[in-house]
Amino acid sequence: MEFFRIGFIKFGVVDLIDIGIVGYFFYHFLLLVKGTRAVQILTGLFLLFLVSFSAFWFNLEGLKWLITNIATVGIIVLVILFQPEIRSALAQIGHSRLLRRFYRLEEQKALDEIVKSSLRLSELRYGALIVLEKNVGLKNFILTGKPLNAEVSAEFLVTLFTPYTPLHDGAVVVRGETVVAAACTLPLTVKPEYNSLYGMRHKAAIGITEESDAVSICVSEETGEISLAYGGRLQKGVGPAQLKESLLNLLKI
Image 1: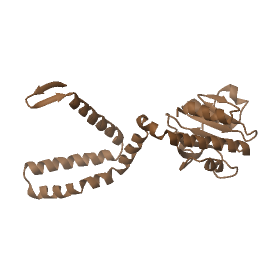
Image 2 (image 1 turned 90 degrees about the vertical axis):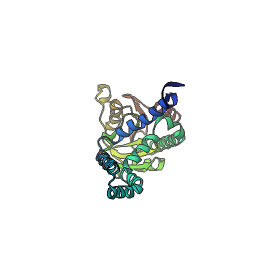
Image 3 (image 1 turned 120 degrees about the horizontal axis):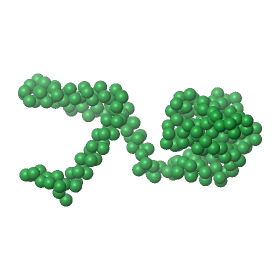
């Protein structure tokens, strides 16, 4: 289907889709580099393009030779210069909703490890607070702790909350299949109905869900009871099957 034709130039549905895709990628590329050093690099590349255009327009042989030789290694240089931006872009593509279905099995495996660790912590009566990040980023709270960026495993989580270890006090933040940070400081709930009933750990578990859409798992060191907090509410006495089912529903895995 064609929209119009001027001489040998035609414009149809395929051309419209083509332009839309190219525009989409350019738009997101500009969002990606906004506020980074890549802006200065792009400015330099634009000036280099103007110099190249002038060299070929005015037939400057020496400058043309220099630019031609630089262009042969230009792709490699660009990859090196834009390495952080390329890595960030690929990570964003990998976390897009369109591709989430391809790694749901990994997310479910990580969830199994979290449930397993919660049960073990409950048996040992180790106080614990695990926060599962959703759509609202928890960067401000992650920065208060120790960065880890380790793969989620039950053994690792139990080790982190073992009493008297350096990182046992505070919250662990999990993003997808990664333990992002430990010993993080979280905001406490200000709801009066929770003030006299719960300790600092439970108040922090509720508080983080009031300021974000995160889900938190809290294990009491006095009773070993597992609690689940979401949307500013606390559900106490959560069993193994109920814990996994609730997490699957809340995290939409």
